[in-house]
Length: 302
Image 1 (tube, rainbow, N blue to C red):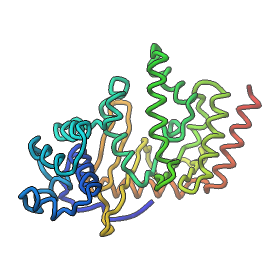
Image 2 (image 1 turned 180 degrees about the horizontal axis):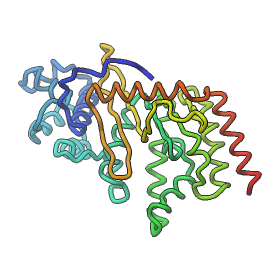
Image 3 (image 1 turned 90 degrees about the vertical axis):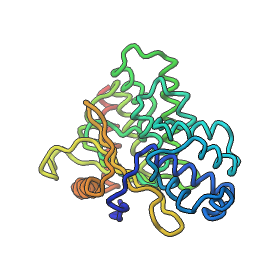
Image 4 (image 1 turned 180 degrees about the vertical axis):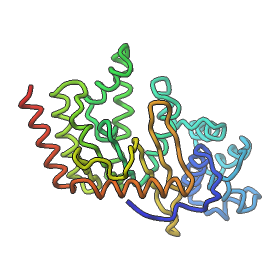
């Protein structure tokens, strides 16, 4: 995981504003326009577009988005998405289809996840979502919502499949480093067959060049000297000048509510914690071997 500068400390940008800025930048680039040409065509200053693309505006006017949409030739669906983000509703177009089965804060997470170039996940309790099998995920969903319908399970599976594609897409797959506590492997979700298949799947995924799975054994204790709850460090691609297009973000999960941390000191603290945990794990090869051993043990116990 990169120990890089995460941008200026005074980065006063909201997550929806940053997502909007990224989409505006992508649309301008797709239209083949430089920032200077776009600004000159609209009769704006360069700083106006720069601030929009960097998520620095506290308020974004719909008329400005209309002007940019017309210049870049975007369709109506994209323009609606821009305006939703400008109105603090961070829901990408494909996610709108599933908004009734996803919690609003998780919508935000999926948007960020889809834009990340690198994810560093610490999960002490369950298998991370990007590595879950369908059966494992369905067992989790049924436990959380006993009356969930088959139709909604199918829709949740569709969301998960789209999320997981970022690890296997042919071009620029996301880099994933997952530190998983052994407890997550020993906790039966669904049944033993589900767990056997899940452990084998995680082992198989870890053979991909962009995926590293490392297991934190139970006997290691508390490497940081304290209890650490699940968190994810999201790192984003760099621009042509070698600077991240967005500052890194921490997604911290908890039973009482999830949180997004953007301040430099929070990001650096979580990076340091992740490295401390990773240093206490088994190496990638040994972790893969353990996953397969645990899968066999579940098979033998059925």
